[in-house]
Image (tube, rainbow, N blue to C red; front, side, top):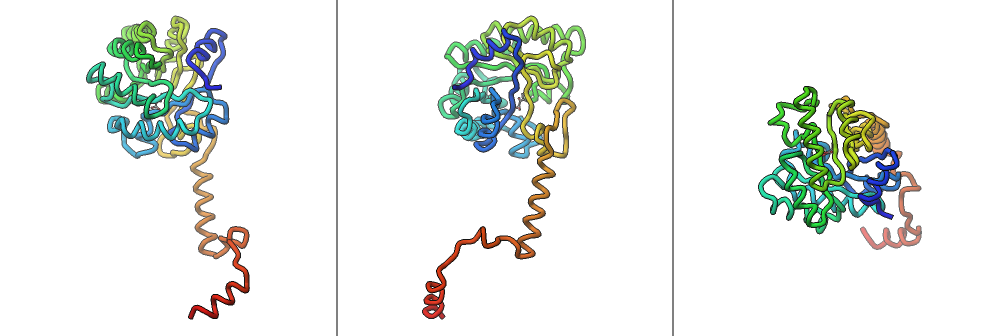
Length: 279
Ligand code: KIV
């Protein structure tokens, strides 16, 4: 049975913590889904980890839909959330609604996520009003990296902390079903979590949040160049993959791969006949 936004609300009410993870393709989504992770976010972080852009800013709606479709085909039980990319929801509420609708109609997602608090509340309300569940995202919002002056922890001063609390409340009032808190001091995330009736999902926001989210590649150790402080590596797959590829190269060169177990036989008489016919 697929997880619904009501299940998440119940988990919060019972004090049950839950994980969320990003995924961007069919195979990964199947593995995540079979592991029982209840929410898969097709994050616009795919711009960096799948497409090699240096930020999420160049990511387009068409790229997001392409990856969301693949994830939706692999996720049988998890709630699939499509991340609205930069400029897909800021220009007008109508455009935001149309693009949110694409995630459900074309992508096969069950919900969307978008960055922003108070300033996005009426957009959230409009999308929710059309029957599309919305996950908010406040704190460090990577699509505003140029405005923020870098990827920095948010809400450290009294004024900034109070603004984040207002953002969270505005999203709740607008009908968001949950809110991601990214790079927010743990005590502030704890307070927001206490004050909201909808679940908070933290990334670099401490253990008091109702849920946690991690980026697939960070958790599996697939990218070795940069590991954010808030990411925990549960595996070192880049090393495992690299060792496998080196062994493959060595075996092909040494002619030990493919062996007979990887090859298809031909009856001797067929081969002999062929050799007599073909010169
Ligand atoms: O795009 C993404 O992966 C995200 C998570 C970090 C929350 O927005």
